[in-house]
Length: 381
Image (tube, rainbow, N blue to C red):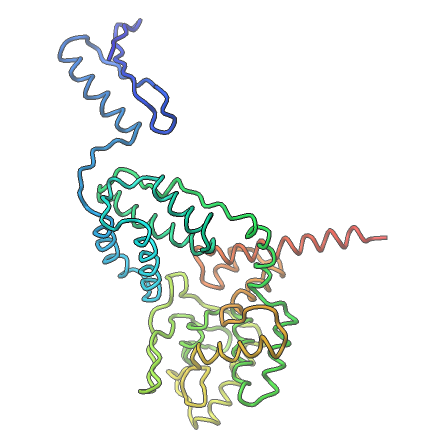
């Protein structure tokens, strides 16, 4: 530390330190009114505190290990998410512990360690970009908790950026096209299913999903009391499906934003009114607490049974896309994007507060629409 006299009669106390990001020497300073032994002692303490903040060098002495951090964090995390999200997180952490020692001290964790890990599993490995991003985000959440608890001074995951591999980037457009169905494909599937008595329920479900953007679990959980003739109140998802006891359990929806009122176009209203009549014929009576779309067993059609039919459709209708219940939700986003509706209104309709896939489909479809406009203008003669 050295001292400089200032023109105003005060004293600047200066000390050098190394920038942790550039390793270059820099100076930190403070100004005091006096140049006495007591002032020098005060200056040393203040300069050290300032340098610690500039270099993020808080004193961390915790001996908590990575697996101990995970256990502590996960015990809280699992109470804030759905069971399926908790299960997925457990699988992610198993992957991490296969590559990084679980007994590693958390305070020793640094960016290079995890950058190398992510490179090994993605850049030079065979995991997908989306799954690698999921792993990174899970680690980021866990280490944010560690910073809050002062187990380490900064999150080593935050600065890491995963760059999509070139071959994945080149296939991006094609993959986005495969995430949703065009209108012609939707109508082809519906027409095919309507030709068979045993799959007409599937046809009504598909068209309703496409017109509303519901998740399949949200559709399963709909009860007649949630329908007022013009809209549906989406307020749950089907959490338990027990064939043996013929029981279902309605639980809270995926997120807070999932609670929403969805206005219905006329065709969706027609589908529900047709379903009401068919249910009454099949089961003699309808109560307000009955579910809407019922199989011949009187229970909501399970997602596994629904997806099995979709797998057969891929082959029978020669559709070169992976069909699942969720593709109709994506197709609804695509439909609304083609109608040039604002992204915010689409996200509110499908119940998304942070919707990466919705945003990707929206941008992809609207770009395609802009390209079609330019093509039409360029072809004017």
